[in-house]
Length: 420
Image (cartoon, rainbow, N blue to C red):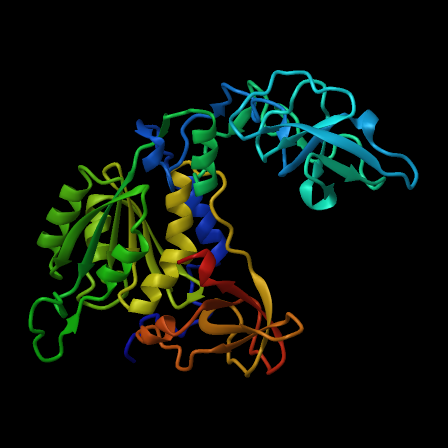
């Protein structure tokens, strides 16, 4: 009888790891970058802070008005249903400092952000005043201290405003600028070498031979990893022979932190990547209980971390987002990477599934008037159908122990807006 080799339809194949076990094993083996660089804050969006930022100032620097209105003494606020008339003594614009004392029975016309004049503690919004030519009338609805921002109420001198490991967003850059911080120290960029493998793979600039395929995987990875904290090294297409693979991977390991290849990690006779890695590196070859993405290799070549992803284009992106990207962020020391939460959506159709593996299907999520999320698949879910992920706006995550889904059942979805 012919020996049957394992394939992606097998559920109880020996050595299959639960996806959570695979994630833990990857995380436990990863080094964290220690190298840092000093950069101007204009270049800091999407970079990981390598040291906490301590505020050199208080913010706001002075007590100021939160609105356009009239600054008064709270003792001049009327009680009960009475009205008070206050004469307008002066106008103060943002950026001006008014040092004259405000006379009894008077107020100061003040603009948003302007420093509060001495002894005045309350601002009446101009829309809440009856304004005459030289005075205002105010009623009893107002409270002491309203519409005033106190000095240091946002940030105190010496506060830790951004912690080490923070992945910097636009608001963080503005916060740094508000404190007159011009440069910061961040983790250096992660150097990632990307290669496609296979004799059947052709460059998009060439004419593919009959039976050949154009290289989409490398371009998917280049786009997905186009981040300000990553430096890409494009290794191109490597032919399926051990000599070329060994030479290319060993050279890349000399300067890259991570090597990502696609193809060559299955059980085919021409899948050489696994064999080469066993000879040249410290490799744990996994068969993960997930679909798509069952064959994936992880380990080290010299000092470089290696990920050998499947060759099918959908499996490449699924394994990248579910296993590789979280690992890259861990290597960068990011402690607050953007959350891509699992949300509940009602399935608009039955979905076939086998227990014993996590299945990640491609779906289109919509929201009805009640706020409920609904989802349907993009159709055929083969791991070679790249259009299935192009049409989608979410992954449908079907848990390891779950079996087929009936129409109307609740399922977990992961929106691409938190991933892509």
